[in-house]
Length: 166
Image 1: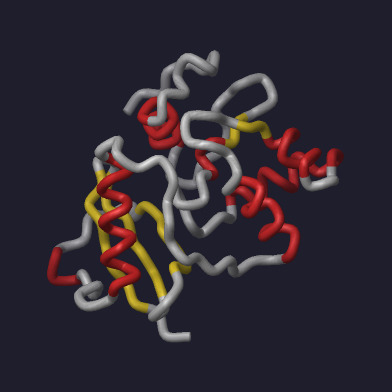
Image 2: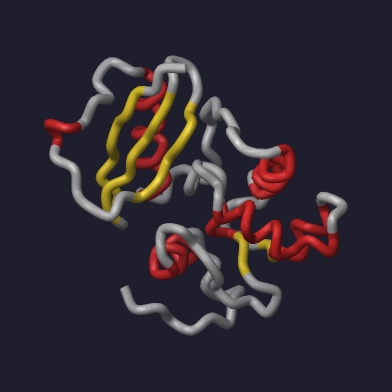
């Protein structure tokens, strides 16, 4: 499968988008900024549609992404990611709750690992998964981004987390 790459300048930094001709494969934050010259997305509808929907999400106008995605992980990871997709905008779930919903109550830590391996950040809302005591734990994009995203979605009143400095 040939992948095309595009970039989106979000309020939280540059995001890289990878897609085939018809499905989204990866969306993640980069540690460095990318110049417009490096953007290879021109002419690829799936990437342009992803950029449009990310823009609407960050503007507060989109609560659920409607994009064709392709999971590329183990059966367990894909099961976890499918469950994470069900967490509504503005709500959270714990690793233990997800483990229980997939019938693997004793695998909360494995759920955390699978959640951390999610290649479709924000689209598959891994930022909505928190610790059992309501604490912010693990986010590949950084805890400050996780906090920002949860606050953006109106979750700040639900959680007793300590403020992470931006």
